[in-house]
Image 1: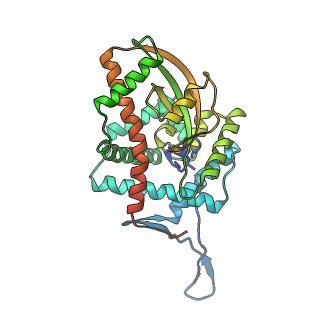
Image 2: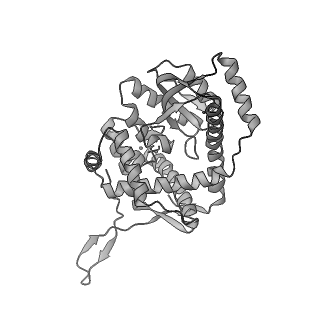
Image 3: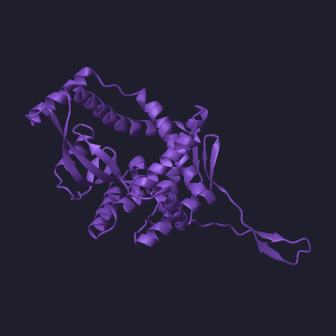
Length: 341
């Protein structure tokens, strides 16, 4: 199992929840410094660090960036994947680290925290999603050159960022009764039996567009992901490595059971056109390019009340996903960021 991307190098998801998901070893970088001994008869090389980005009142160090990049390079080498040139890779990883730092600063200002009970529950869930118990998961983490403490800290950071996102987005999204009625009317037109709803269990890998990855580069990367899947690569491993959907990448790209109206139209149309076990061509949405796999489908019996609540939640989730992208662009624009690559 490759836990690296979403746990320690979500820039994967490039995550790494990069990312091939969607969304994803360590190396040290030293700058030689010649220092004179007191008798001026010898010199030696000493490691020094440097700042690669200032983010508001925080900094990102060269050593931190190199660790993230080294993790991604090691994973790509182990899986036979290709990466962009070093300079482009560094820029992509650093941009992800900048966004993480901005959101973590917001969490600190709001005095948010993750208690150990909640953290352990999430860690156990991740282990179970990989068909492991905690002991097996710890062994797999160590085999990947990490420590369980490092993984716990990265999961804590992810959970803090999720808390910030939920707080902010919940204040910006509303769903009216009329919104719910419109979706229910649409479902009624599509199905004569309103006591059942069609559900699809799917997973995806998201390749975002960002300041260092344009339309063509994102599409090409998504096509490379699909090609590797066609050649037999493991979907979950690729999701953890590459997917920019941090939440689902952490669980191998899994979205769970999805109902009509829960995803954006471009995604839903593509998903509904797939057969069970089929992988889509890259699908463009406002979030970037998705590579989607339909795992299975089922019909669920629902009451009118539960159907209405499920529709409301589906609309909210779709709008929240859209609003999250807008909010992240806003906080990135408002932050003081000085990149020093």
